[in-house]
Length: 458
Image (cartoon, rainbow, N blue to C red; front, top):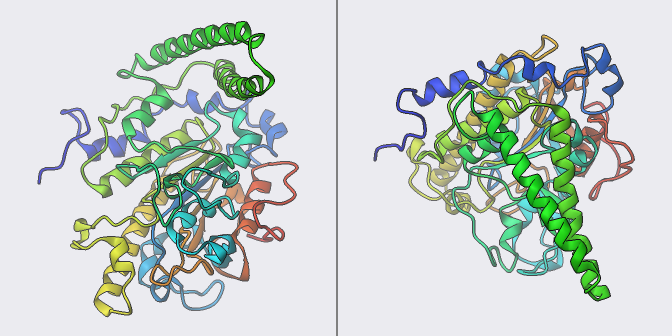
């Protein structure tokens, strides 16, 4: 089958991906700093490194756990050797920490029974037990949104949510859990998931505006003014309505208006940050045919968002937990989820391990790209980032949620200690997230999810 092109005819996809990180005008970077790097010292505790460069945090989710025997390295803290699944990271070993012993107790069945895939997704970044229901949705705020709440005002977009799922379902998905749990990892509140975008064109246009290079800034400004006009009309109507509502409806209206005010605050923040960035690259045409190409272009969207300081917090779902698509790119025609229930069949285990390694290859390519792009302080984007890669299931065959397969990549602007295989015993994954929030400058977060403390010396 011929792959669908999502680029302009005169530009190949490879050219697009190669050029997307190289053609952004430097003023877009400089505008994110208050005059110069020395002046940025005042922001060191707010998503900023010691040099004044932005500090970015991302959370990348892969589905269905991993084959433990192929995932975990052999050896000691520094002299470890990657097994097959993580070998694509060999060239980046000094920028990666393999984090053993991280658990999500609230993703286990407990009294709720089946539904490990739904719990795998929505417990991953929240650390709380979900309410098992198709309609009464209750999770918890996710760590990316807890961070965005504190530092999101520094950029045009408080956070960026991406997905490589082509389709989403609604209603009931996994054993009585709402599909909202299974297709989301980012939650702004216990009842409000941050729906990720899977179309790279929409992501690009949201970040930089519609049209071709040279038109996007004006188009983005025009769209912002249109939104402001709409908000003004909505607020005027709401004020007229206020006196005609009973107390219950007034509360509902107030909740609605709170959302409107948040949008208005975002517009004001964008206006304060000045003109839109306009990269000299073509706009993607849509979702590519190949899952591998889809993942690659969405990684590039994240890289471009970080490089232009459009946001400093991002999440990306490579595929939701329970995903059962085949991986014909590597010669596997059976569904991924189906294969993970391998019942110790060597052939099925080998195929799952190849899929696990394939996902790691995509991640390693993304890290390599981050490492190639120079940041405003002369280091790399990877140096000034903290990237979590992991799954909410450990062993997909048994649906376990202890000793989760989790990596921490990047140097955190010099604050992290990568190049290690770290065993943490058996502690909540939330402890790691709490420590990352500290490094992002989040204040007044004494605990998170089911945390029992902070993870020191990461």
